[in-house]
Amino acid sequence: MAGDHFSGHAVDYAKFRPGYPAALFDWIAAQTPGHDLAWDCGCGNGQASVPLATHFRRVAATDFSAEQIAQATPHPRIDYRAVPAEASGLPDGCADVVTIAQALHWFDFDRFYAEVRRVVKPGGAIVAWTYQLLRAEPAIDTVLADFYTHTLGPHWPPERKWVDLAYRGMPFPFEKIATPQFEIRLQWSLADLLAYLGTWSATQRYRKAEGRDPLTALDERLAPAWGEGVREIVWPIAIKAGRV
Image (cartoon, rainbow, N blue to C red):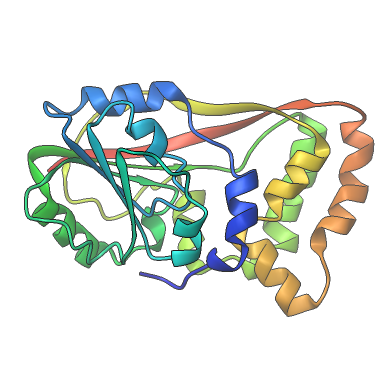
């Protein structure tokens, strides 16, 4: 797995990262004949683990970061553990599905996919997704795109390229499952947006490298376009799904 980019701000990550639409989990459950165990790998603070628990009798939720696990939402059907994606410690052939929310691009693909084949039941599913750069309104989107590409550009880890590509071209040696389109939609204030942008790994790296917060200048640029109140924020979700 690539370096740990989120343990240092696990509390903010838990508070400000958006959740996922319920329809996504309905669709995931429909891809598996059994609903005994879902392995949520790279679970972070449990944003996907908790909704999975409404569809599966048990959820094994794993993450490399003990700090992220410490912020996870407790649930009687979820077993949280801090272990690498490539060495889950789960029994052979125990899971009906493995889900990877906003994390697959950080993993060692060859080692992780071998672990998936070991842990997931034959005929089970692997479902990985990532959400792309958010959009709001054209004037806001222009400022955010410049911030993402130019201000933070040098500070993004190289694995971020897979998110920008919507996971296209990523190694994925499984029989493809056709996927519908999903989006995250939230009503946010400018303060909400800035808090979320503060959880980006590149924002954290910029602060350490430059000794200042890039969000201060961004706030000044966004405020005239934003005005007062809330705006609808939309994240398109890109999915890779396959049969194991």
